[in-house]
Length: 84
Image (cartoon, rainbow, N blue to C red):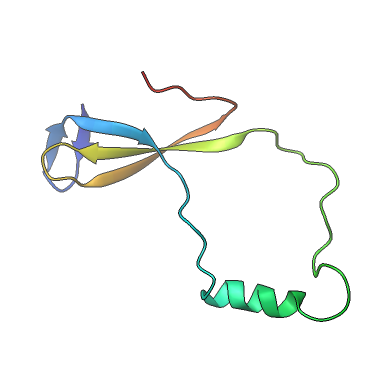
């Protein structure tokens, strides 16, 4: 049970883990980055040698069973998540 702002009541929600969508090649930022990579020379930004963070932030998507409204809830950093 979770609160749905559209239904304005507590309803059953289905839970799934959020995954990023595919990157768009024609997005303005991607075109700018590709333009920067073009030509002679190396990468425009230095390659990161050591990583401070080892875990990814996990985000859940709660979907209302009545109206289909989707809520995003952040769980924070963890190595592995299992939905049972």
